[in-house]
Image (tube, rainbow, N blue to C red; front, top):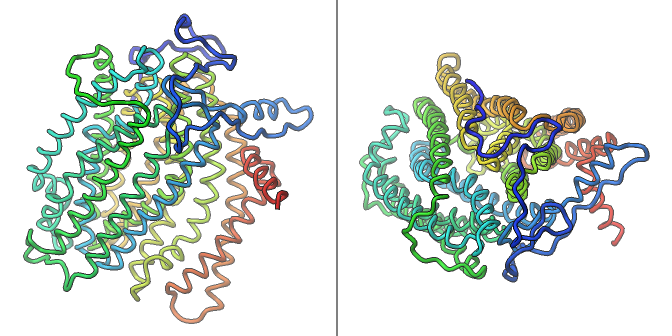
Amino acid sequence: MPPADDRTQQIPRVEPGGPPRSQPAPRAAQPVSAERGTVPHRATPPPGWHAAETQPIPAVLPEPGLDQAAEQAEEQTRVLRPTGGSGGGKSLLRASGSMAIATLISRITGFGWKILLALIIGFGVENDSFTVANTLPNSIFELLLGGVLTSVVVPVLVRAAKSDADGGEAYVQRLLTISTVLLIVGTTISVIAAPALTWLFISDGDSSNPALVTAFSYLLIPQIFFYGISALVGAILQSKQIFSPPAWAPVVNNLVVLATLGVYASLPGRISVDPVRMDDAHLLTLGIGVTLGVTVQSLIQIPALRRTGFTFRWRWEWDPRLSEFGGLTLWMVGYVAVSQVGLIALTKVATAADAGSYSIYTYSWMLLQLPYGVIGFSVMTAILPRMSSAAADHDYPRVVQDLSLGNRLSTVALMPISAVMTVLGVPLALALFSLKGSATDASSVGLAIAVSSFGVLPYAITMMQMRTFNALKDARTPTLIMVVMTAAKVVMALLTPLVLSPQDVVYGLAFVNSFSFVVGWLVGEAWLRRRLGPLGSAKFLATLGKTLLASVLGGLAAWGATTGVDALIPGPAGAGTGWLQLLAGTIVGFAIIFGLMALLRVRELEPAIGRLTALLRRR
C-alpha cells in the first residue's frame, strides 16, 4: 500500500529540522499572549465542569548535566492551551486525570452490566444473539458519523472557534442541522434493513439464531440516533475543553441498563428462542431498556452545552467550510467502512464456531479495552485539542512533542497492565464469571485475554497516531492504514478455522485482533515519519525498553504468586481461587514493575511519584 502523497495534505509540510514553508499572519482580533500559541479565551466556563484554571504539569527534576532531562522538564510543564471558545487551559495530567475517574467508573459499570448479563443468561446463543444485535447500532453509527465525530470534528470545531467572530457558533449550528438529518435518515433505513444486516454479520448454523438477532435488532438499532446526538454534543463540549459531561454521561447509561437487567432477572422463565416472539417480555425488556440507556446518555449532556451559552437553531444555508469537512468525512466514512469489514469477518468466523464463541471474544476484548479506556483514551482526549491548535498554527514540532508525550505516558501506564493481564487472564475471568458454578466458560474468557493482552499498548498508540493525522486535517492516511490493518485481520481470521479446532477458534481471533494493531502501529509510524520527520523515537524507545524490562520481570513475579496460591488451595479453581490469585498477582506484579521502573528512572513516571510522595508527606 503506497503512502499518502503530499497532494492530500491540507497544510504546508515541514522539512525535518526546518520551519514551515508558510506561516499565517497574526490576526489583529486574536492577540497572542505571552505563552506561544495561546489565545485569549472568549467565555467563562460553566461552573462545576472541568475547564479549570491553567495548572502546569509537575515538572520532572532534571539531573545535573543532562540536557534531555531539562527538555523533559520543559515538556511536562506545558499546559493545554485555550482554543477559541474554550473555558481555559489546564494541564494534560489534570485534564486526563479528571476524565480517567469518570471513564473508570463508566468502564466498571459498563462491564458490570455485561457481567450481570452473562450471569443471568450465560454464554450461549441468547448472549451471542444480543451481543451481535447490540453491535449493529454501534457499527452503523460509526459508519454514518461516529468516526467523524470522535476524531475529525474536534479539530474542525477548534479551527472554527479560533477564526470566527462568533466563536464558531453558526458553523456548529449548520453542522448539527446536517448531522441530525443524516442520523434520522440513517436510523430509519437501518431499522427497515434489520434482517439484511443480520445476514451480513452472522453465519446461519446450529450455533447461531438469526431470528433472535433480528428481533433484538429492531429494538436496539434506534440507538443510532441517540449515539449520534451524544457524540455531537460531546464533541462540541470537548472542543471547548469541557470534558466532564461527555465522560460521565455513559455512567448514567450503564446505570439505566443495570436497572433494566434487574427487571429482566425478576421475570419468570427464559427468553423464547424457538420460536422467537416479538411480544416476549424478556426480549422487550432487554431491548427497550438498553436503548433507553443510550437515550438518557444523549439527553443528559444538553444542559451542559446550554450553560456554555450555545443555542441551537436550524441553519440550512451552506458554509463553504462544510465542503472541506465533507471531504474529511468521506475519508472517515471509508475508514469506518473498512474497519467494519474486519468486524464482519471476525463475527462470521466466531458465530460459525462453537456457540458462545462470539460472546467470549467480545468479553475478552472488552476487558482489554478497560485500561485503554481509562488511561489511553483519557490522555488522547485531553491532548487532541492542543495538538489540533498546534497544527492550526502550523507548529509541527509541538505536534510531534505532543504525540511523543502521549505515547510515552501511554507506555508507562499500559504496558505494566498488559503484562499483568497476560499472567492473570484466567484468574481474572474466574473471579468475574465463574459465580454461576461452572468455570469452563470463565477459563475460556481468561485464555482469550492471556493470548491477546499484548495488543493493549499497540491499540493505544495506533489510536494516537490516527488522531494526529486527524489534527493535521488528513483523513486519507488513517483510512489507508486501516486498509492495511483490515487486510491482515481478514486474512488471518479466515485462516483461523483452518488451523485451529472449533473450540480454539476464539483464541485465534483474539490474537488476530490484537496483532492487527501491531501492524497499524508500524504502518502509522512509517507514514507519520514521512509527514512530520523525526518523531522523538530515541526518548520513546528508552521509555519502552525500560518499561518492557520491568513489565516482563513483574509479570514473572505475578505468575509465581498465582502459582503459589494455586498450590495452597486444593481442588478445582473457582471464583474464590480466582480472586485470591488476582489479588496476590496484582499486588506482587505491580509492586515489582513500578519499583523497577523507579529504579530505572523512567521519567514519565516521576510526576505521579512526586504527587504520591507529597501526599504521603502531608499525612
